[in-house]
Image (tube, rainbow, N blue to C red):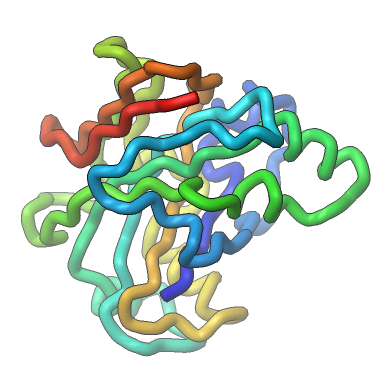
Length: 204
């Protein structure tokens, strides 16, 4: 199982971090060891002073595919979820300044929160899903898949040009504006279309 992540897929998030708008999807991978085990607290690593939350809609691939055309992409997934791409922002900034890969900032142990899965058929339009992240009961991120620069089916098609997609692979589709720092004793919860998808306690 591999975790394929998309960066800079929402305009307002690009602007809040003063990043350049990409001409193609930005793709990076987290190892399977990045998955935070179910019901486990997230412990802030000692190598960073600025872990940021990034809530994202997820899709789970259900069959093998490569060079998938966008119009056929819907047949490659039937489950949708919500998760967090935890990012060591200070480490990422240092790496970006040197033109180095992001893995140390994005792929560390526990950096991928994966909530429960819901059938795609439950939703009327996969390209109009509302979702949010709450920190200590307050909404800190709010998004809708209609605001994606590249929609889910386009992402599956694009990624499959470079990586063969296999059953169980997960795609993180990008985060909206509102990312921010977590602190010890924070409590995070993710909501997709009014349904709670995950909760995470933060430990120091």
